[in-house]
Image (cartoon, rainbow, N blue to C red; front, side, top):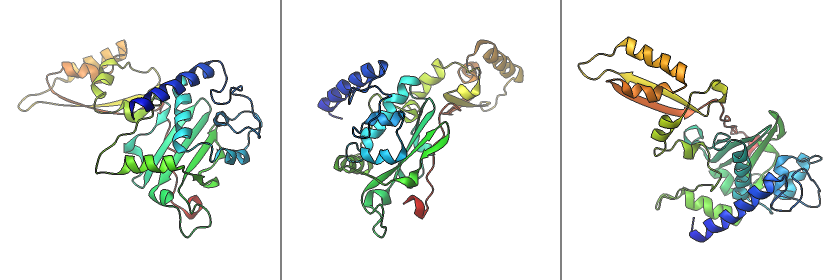
Length: 275
């Protein structure tokens, strides 16, 4: 992202955040609860009263993939930064270029796109143009399904996706102010997470899950009492065992994964109905 693009994104995000805190839309200026079928707007993602699935198509052409997902990410991060966005590469299907699930309160949005979606399904009556798929859940109940729409990719979307997925000059794309779990679990942040995390009282509310493996150094043994003492201290103080384990004279390896509070990726099965 160029300096000019970052400046523009900063301006848009600041406007979004100011309006959102007041319950209004930074795009149209209306209340986030307002709906008019004659005035399509990105804040329809929040499902204002009277907005129905049939109205979603009115957003096509006005907003592309990157604009839609950026808005969803910005909204989600107003509630619980990072935790609400599952964009983990390790969980993404190898066949998908885009596979993200984002949650905000009772709403869940998912985006999906494969190479064949970008190319367009040549022999299909529907989706024979570059497109992506979208799913929306309300209170875990279907509102919009992946198979319902083939959402056109804008020229800008196609160009950006081509740049991100080419291998000659590696390019990493980040949603500025819309960072999710992929950014949080990068190699650069793991040590920070271990040192600064606290143990969640309820595992269902945990953003991260630490799996710590302790093995004895060559020619040495590990005291079971020492490990038991650290486990007890972890329970008493709320300090993750992963952080305390480094006191042991042993080999310690911690694998950090997404916790139970992170939404599960909503998979799109490879069937003709989903093309």
